[in-house]
Image (cartoon, rainbow, N blue to C red):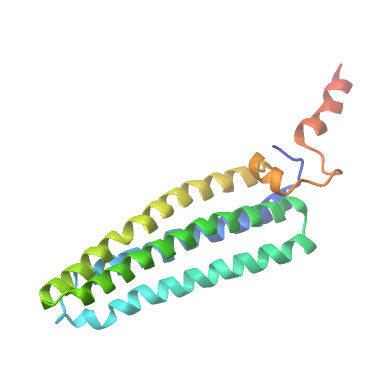
Length: 192
C-alpha cells in the first residue's frame, strides 16, 4: 500500500535496507569466500593460520550490524514516524532468515566435525569435515541471494512511499496517515 510521506521520511525509511545491502554484499560475501577458501587451503599453507580469521571477522561484523538493526528497530518506533518504523521492522524480519541460514550452516559444519571424530583414518576425518564445510555454504548462499533481491526491492518501495501488505497486517498504520489514493481523491474532485 502506498502512503503519502515526504521525501526526508522516505530517505530515512531507505536507511535500514541500504545498511542491510552493505551487510549482505560486503560482509556476508566475505564470510562465504572465507569459508570456501578455507576449505581449499592445504594444511601446510601459509594462509592456513588465517582461515578462521577470514570467517570470524566478517561474521562478527555482520552480527553486529544485525544487532544494531534490531536495537534500532525497537527504538525507532517511539522516536520516528510509523513509515520509517515499518521499514526498520521489515529489515529485522528479513534478518531472521539470515540468522536461520547461519544456524543451518553452523549445524552442517558441526555435523561434519562430529562425523570427522568418528573416523579412524586421518584422511577420512579431514574429508568429512571439508565436505560438510563446503555444503554448509549452500543455505547461507541461497538466503543471501534471496535477501539481496528482497532488500533491493524494499529500497525501491521505500522510495515510492510503499509498505508491503503483509507488514500492514502485523504493524497497522495510524488512522491519521493518509494513503496516496486518499490524498489524490480531493485533487480529482476539484479538477472536475
